[in-house]
Image (cartoon, rainbow, N blue to C red; front, side, top):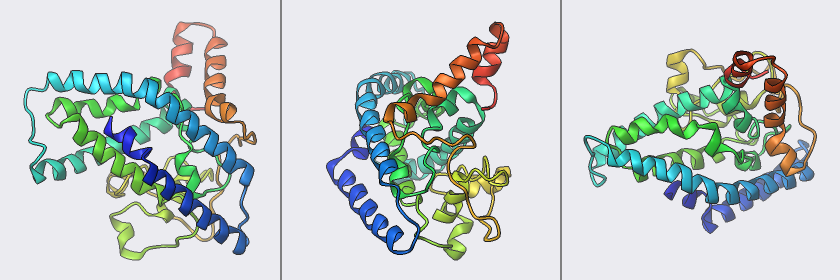
Amino acid sequence: PAMLDTLRSPLFILGVLLFAAIEAVWRIRSGHGYDFRAAAGTLGVALGDAVVSALLGALIIGTAYFAVWQAAPVRWPVDDWRTWVAGFVLVEFAYYWMHRWSHTIRWMWATHAVHHSPNELTLLAAVRLGWTKAFSGGWIVFLPLVLGGFHPLVVATLLALNLKYQFLLHTEAVGRLGPLEWVFNTPSHHRVHHASNPAYIDRNFGGVVIVFDRLFGTFAQERQEEPCRYGLTKPLVSNNPAVIALREWGWMLRDAWRAGGVLPAVRVLFGRPR
């Protein structure tokens, strides 16, 4: 699908590496330090994600989206600007809930935890994404938009823009941005989202905008008196891409196996992360 292609286009990849290199220089010169081993692990995870998503994501997700599109009772014209404006708002709304559930449902968190595993927040953290997105089911949240008449490529393109925008949020190099922070997701807001401080956990789920966090009570402001601590509440110290990508799945399936019955196992798999 278009979303996968645009996120892995040579130009975008070159931009990621260029900005990451500039940020690394800034971090070293400003005394923040830079974990090059973790960066290498992230690149390994990103490479694995590109391969797995190309094979499974395009097959499973792409097939499902176009199958649902065939059943859509109405279809909004792709060449009408109003389709794109409405689509943007609805994709942002669906993304907010998908992202929120990815933090509160363990089956979805097993994939999303990969993204939260870096112990320092850098631009490269944006491309540390789980290999199991096709199985965790977050993409299902966007199917109602397709059934409601938005072409799969409209949804995929808006999601791709959402994710590209968020690449720039994964940094400590940008401070507060004043009035923009009332509407848009910013590096400050996203630092809170990646923090493991108890006061910051499960906050700021927005993509491009922060409006839905303000509406649904999940917004938190970055506070100078409580600096963000990054990483998982059970820190990941390995830089092995396979360990990074699969640790939480192993823990979750182990806990389900030990749960002592079908219903307890279901509660482990679909309850809150531990």
